[in-house]
Image (cartoon, rainbow, N blue to C red; front, side, top):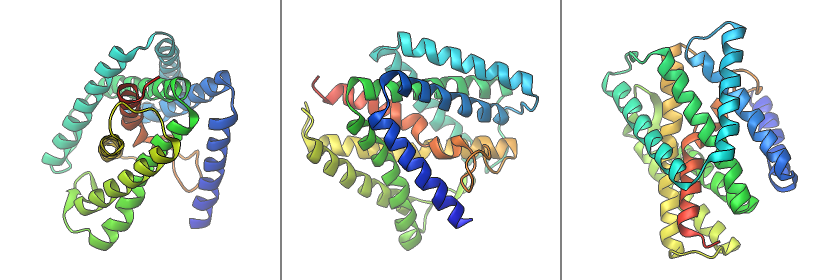
Length: 270
């Protein structure tokens, strides 16, 4: 299993970096839409859809709204929708934790609607961030988010005591989150120092803001955990050997990437 996970991770990493730096704009858009299609198929399982036809209809709906989002998105719409996502994530996870892991009364229609919002906004942000800024800045955003997971894993194993949300994800601890945020700050500061973008804010302040966004990405992971628990699913899918589904790999990115798009729009001079 470990060997399988490593091989899959290497293939994904190499393929993603090659696409990020060498794909044309139109190819990158196509790849992000394809990723949205796979994510939408898996998300439909959270709402209990099992038959092919309803799932295909949902996937086509997400695909169509993603295309519209790419055409018509602007700073204000991304800001409002992202703030709404932040509120939904927080309420959803806190409510599940306070209920001590009892299933929420959220309707399947509500779950499908949230999937439409989360996947579309992620797709738009991945495309806009690369187009408006650079592949390097997008990669730095992703590395900063992933740094939280890496730092949380090691610091949680070494120092973890206080559970973050034991009824949602028993393995996560506050000490792990703190370690992850510290590593995310280091990664962000180092990346900004190397890239030297023209910033409106001091580099330390931007790095701190990036680390806080990365910290909030943990909520994306917890949110997907809640959805899987309510649907009695271990993984969102099985398309990635040793890793589960697409959503299992991008859950923390769904909220963090739109937040990073907003951050760069606020602090980077164009």
